[in-house]
Length: 244
Length: 57
Picture 1 (spheres, chains in turn yellow, blue):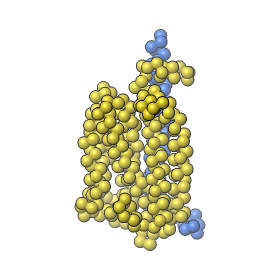
Picture 2: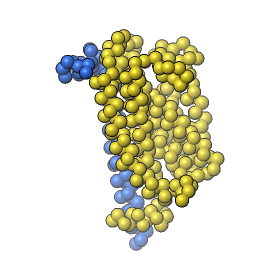
Picture 3: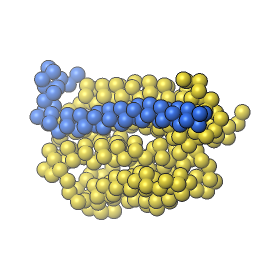
Picture 4: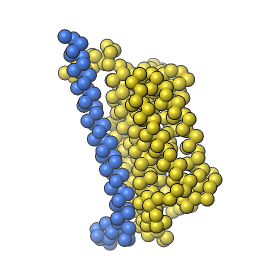
């Protein structure tokens, strides 16, 4: 058996079905653990009191909004380059969850901004570029929904995803390039994080929970897409027959 | 442990509205996504089975 076996939708359908329960359980465990750290172990912040606890969903959601977009762009590029069916299906399966995490990042940002900055929203570079990310997700999903021809839709949507990918580094570096009200990164790969160890731990555990959640729902969604697209094949017919 | 009582926990140092407004809407978003996903999975299967039955006739 080699890795390419799973590039076939029929095989991947079975593999995904086996993986889903594991990722679902992992999501549950990491979420409970992360919430426990967030609310019971992480100390009160000396500047922001308890309001800072929004960080434990805000930052992981914002990370996911960007990561998921990059993963979508990756699958879109693979699909466009090699014309692999499953890659486009993966891209489509990820988009709704990416849009939801973007919305959560914006929403929790507003509910954190109001008590700390005194405003729900400001047109600063970080907030505006994240809002553009939400519009990109919605636009891509709408484009896919609007084009009936699956192959043309796949290509058009992936092309839009790739063009929009330029927005991701803009979001990430916006706090450096422009003078933003939004604070700079507290966690980066190059220097030690500027926050308490427990707070960082809570954020990372919640980020892992968000990853596991994303993988779980994306696998569930891609299985549905596979069934839809392969409905004329013998294996789907046999599968549905077995269930009745 | 940070909290002396449950009411202190829900109060969140006076920021309860904002903290629970954030967590509540996040939980709602995820609940809606999972619900829609489950419903869509059932719909797809039923539809594909119907199509298959037509073809057989």
